[in-house]
Amino acid sequence: MRLFWRWPRPSWRLGVLAAATTLAVFSCWYYLATPAYIREANLYNAVFFGILRRSPSPEEDLSSVGLDRRLAALANTHAYRPDSPIQDPEFRRAFFGAIGQYDVVRFYATHPNRLVLTARRLARHAFLTRPERHGNFLKESGYPPRAQSHRFAAWSDFKARWPRDLRFLVGVFVLLLGTGVAARWRSASVTSGLLSELLIILGLMAAVQYVAKFMGNGLLDTVKQLHLFNILIDTCFVFVVLWVVNLLGNAFPASARGPQARLEP
Image (cartoon, rainbow, N blue to C red; front, side):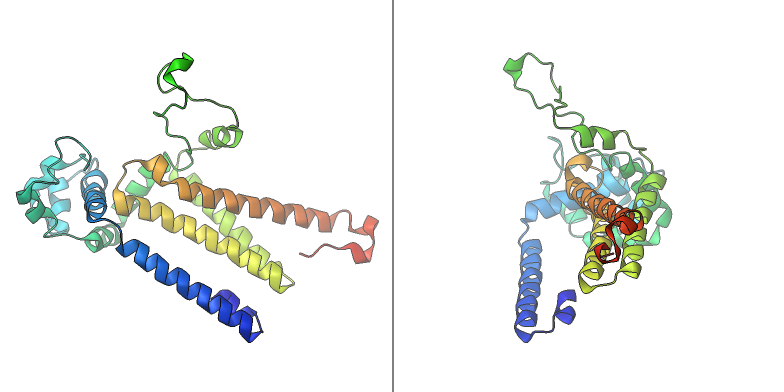
């Protein structure tokens, strides 16, 4: 839709409008087509392995989302345990008949301290791209269980050493979004302006993905379900590096190349 206002030709605008509409319709269909058992498992995990994960007052948390306080016995459990009651008719009436995804979002919106606490716990795994308990060697290789190869893993290993702290994560977002705003302010053409806006959008998408992770499925399978988050963050870093290189290229060698050799900011 942003391109719709940027491209002057009616045929281009029509194509962009058709593409945007198709993407929006497909996204809605994909969301609504999610199987019921996945929706139910995610909601279970969002409550018992998210809101109630090490909760100081699980009974009060359950009451705040309209659930029976006796369900506090299920705190810190997830839907994929063999003893999970997710298929028990009595539990289904007491749980799925009384709560929806909106109630989870409303809980975090009305409990900002718990929102920050859960986000801090998730930050411990934010930049891990390889699950720590999953190996990638065959049994016949002779390596011990859960052993991981470190070939072609320089960037993953580097990110794994980053501080596992919410303040550092916020700092990364500030760096990426700040660079996008600065690049947009300095842009001298439509192309550079749109690229800087794309950087801002990708950074905001990463932030939404981060919050949607624990609101949608609690703190289960954090590394796997933050894969898209890491892809977006890595893409933003590529933007930042290229922008800095472009700035340096314009600042230093311009006099040697002559006035006509200036790069586009």
